[in-house]
Length: 203
Image (cartoon, rainbow, N blue to C red; front, side):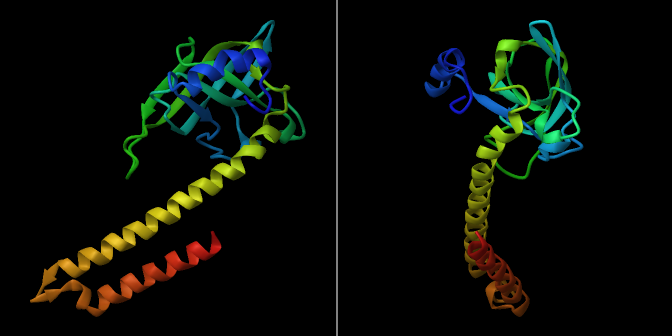
């Protein structure tokens, strides 16, 4: 919205978002494409003053609880898949927008992750963000930062888990001594520590 939204879109959408009155989410990942934007299959076909959206998205953070979404969809058939991706704002109560199911995860339970779908969901043409076909370049300006944030969170989580694991092995007793004294435990923790150290260096 800051990069490509019109003044009208910014005035309409940003105040409730910044006031924490609404929750947003981004719809990029798809069942067969992951986050490979060039391979997405969700379509947005122009029909007069509207676009008709059809397709499925998966691994969407806050998908079940969001008020609005920004969805990436293919707006034209082109030999260059990078020039046929567009972005749309879709209200969560719009007919044809389907919250399919909440996915089960190993962690981050406070943030729902969902599968979502569009079934002939009609969106006003004024909900297009930026230029038609300009979505890929807009996303590339932001996704690299997002992926770096994910890497930082993953590294920090791994370091905390190792810290907790070491503390547990020092407290847990077996055969009259803490399991941290056993060679297999030491080797396993050393391997984990090595991988975490490499991860931090690479990050």
